[in-house]
Image (cartoon, rainbow, N blue to C red; front, side, top):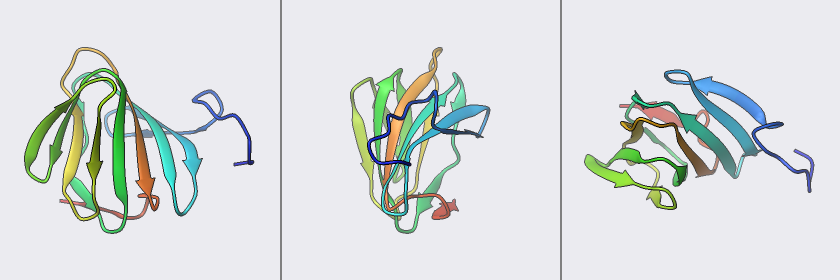
Length: 116
C-alpha cells in the first residue's frame, strides 16, 4: 500500500473465510498485518496456532468467544486478547449479531498457521 493512503473496508483487499465471513487487509506486509474482520452469527474458526506470529484481537462491535490455550474467554466491545506464537486458539460468534474485530499479527500470520 502507498504510504499515507487512506484505507477502509471500501478499498482494502477483501477475502472470504470460514463460513462466509469477511476479511479486509488494512495493512499487509511481512512484519505486520492488520485485518478488519466480520463474523456472522453462529460462525466459528478452527482451532489453530501460529509458529511465529503473535496476534492481538480487538473487538469493535459484538461479543466474541475465544478458546485460548484450552481456556474459554468472552470479550465485549473495546476489549482485547493477546495470543503469543504457539498457543492454540480460535474465535467464535455465538451471538445474534455480526461480530466486527481487528486482528493485528506480527509478523504476518498468513502461511504460518497450523490447524490443531
